[in-house]
Image (cartoon, helix red, strand yellow):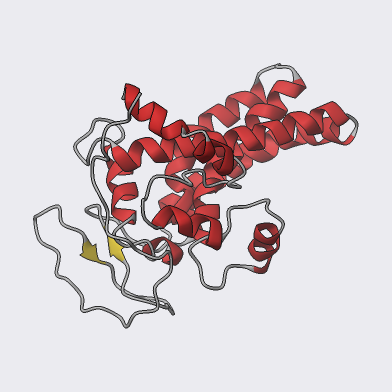
Length: 253
């Protein structure tokens, strides 16, 4: 079977650009991307946001949402960490979940990169953000952490709270809490892969292949723009790209 042509060819962009700052573009009523104010020390061109009202700095509401999510995560951890420390199979369950989260981010990333637009119900804002990211990939590197992961925290936080409250098997709690936490943090891992000088812990984990690296994710932003979609560790990328997994999906969608 032959996959249909790509829906929207993109201009080749490297993952981090060291160009001089661009002039600020005044915001209009149109849905065109606009330059965000540079309020912190930055490298590269001026960041560009693609949603009305979007900004790069952390807001109190975003901080509150993320802290609530972390509280729910900590509540689950009080149940799962003792189990992990005494069960090798539980560690295998956690590792499997981490790999599965990498795969899940790849499927979601592929879908929002290639289908829909800002008017799409429910997912429109995510679609606009991911597609806009390909025109200004340097912007994510300048987002605050709470700002960056708050959107993913909103749907996962109640699930994590239920996981803490319900009397479910511990192995299931290990699997699902690892999955949810990895999904939330995937955007921060993604941000680190665009940074010229990420935090020391990020460099260490990237070097060890635990998290997606700049060199690995940079290939996603290079022609032909149709591979390396997974953004947690990237461990699933070689196999999915080798078998043409996303090309097969495009046959059916």
